[in-house]
Image (tube, rainbow, N blue to C red; front, side):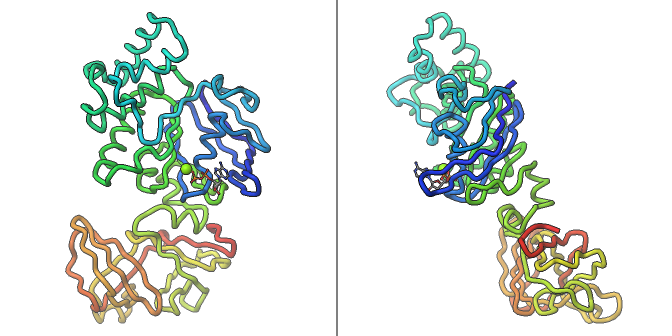
Length: 356
Ligand code: ADP
Ligand code: MG
């Protein structure tokens, strides 16, 4: 069993509250992501798992066993280092062997484990090369092999690909996801990039100031964010969140420029959230004002054609909304358009920012 459990774990650094009453379960063989802005406590959580920091309160269990008083060396979790740093003067083989040589493991056992991990990670054919002769993906595999050669219960990565350029990041995260699927080992992964978190994680936890705000599968959190904070953290462009009031025609936002006829809308809502892809945009026709027309008038403020899709910023009353449209629709700045949104796709948030 390699599940990792936090029960009400709190950690301060002096007066700074780094991790605030965190409870979660990372299941065996899961790709679990911690996602949050800088200084939200992501690295501290990893350090607590590794045993490099002690919690002030709460309990940490690995494989069902409390580890609060277990030393890092005995916890059997391995960190794959941030920049995937490999020793440049050593071959891939010696890099992978290193943790075992350092622990004075018998030579025959080292070779057996090296063979094992090399087969799992498909790196047998590149073991003779130094890191400089490996591609980015190969270096990643070697770095993971070096962490896994100790046969840890879980391995951890702290924002491992943030230093790479955008194109390489996309390739690398696909590679990582693939490796994790093939290995079937517990991976705890930290990132501050929402797209990366969503693309790789089986499940993720979203952090704010040391507090876990929501845990779930990425698609689940995206579709049902528990709060306006979480809603804003996932999705690009970001969810449109507007102050709202209950008016004659249903829920109104942007001084009545946006109206949602939803009799089930919660009365306590003070904000509505509209995902950019849920906003439908049509050219304005006089039909819109006639009976049966459902669109609300808006003016096109700016258009960003991005190839496969187009981001349109709309002015509705005093509010600005962003809509994400497929392809390259013929929409020009300053044109009048009709906007609409399925009532079922509208998110409602209450006084404390919680979803209703
Ligand atoms: P993240 O990895 O999400 O950027 P961290 O876990 O590094 O966040 O930091 C969480 C909070 O704890 C921050 O306020 C940070 O300044 C503080 N912190 C982290 N490490 C230390 C440390 N060694 N000493 C003092 N404060 C720290
Ligand atoms: Mg960090």
